[in-house]
Length: 209
Picture 1 (cartoon, rainbow, N blue to C red):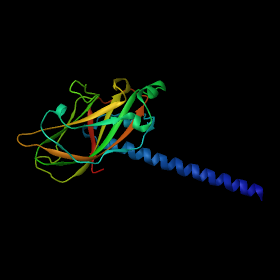
Picture 2 (tube, helix red, strand yellow; picture 1 turned 90 degrees about the horizontal axis):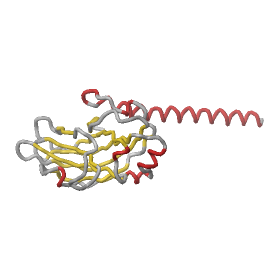
Picture 3 (cartoon, rainbow, N blue to C red; picture 1 turned 90 degrees about the vertical axis):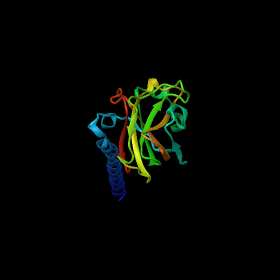
């Protein structure tokens, strides 16, 4: 009787392990599939070796208006890596080389124009750009789209380039006439890789996520 109970418990543990393995794999597959939406089919680390996926964190819910003033002189969002209970130095000490930043935003146009996104190492006007080229895109291609849509963006940053565990998302706009746009509900996910950076720019993974 005791042996039967022992075997039953062992069988239950095996089933649980198989379930967790399949569940975790399906989560990873979901992340990798997102890479298929990158325009131009650029190679990115999400298709390669990512050691750790940290959870999404809500960073800002309020709505911000972006104008065609210089992106260095208007609102920006600061991402503090320590909010995930990690630091650049601790990650580098255990062999990680690249931080992958995936962030989501709700975006809509006030005027027909182009939207711009940048990643910097600081908030001041003397800060340095962490990825290049910056991202230039159009929410309503060829027309004014005043409806919000959810976007997801992706960047790879060498850990050695990050100062004080901080990254700043900056916003800009340009167009022929008025080109204001709004964004809200910023959410950020961090991943780390032992590989060196593959893609140097900031890319738009998909919208409607």
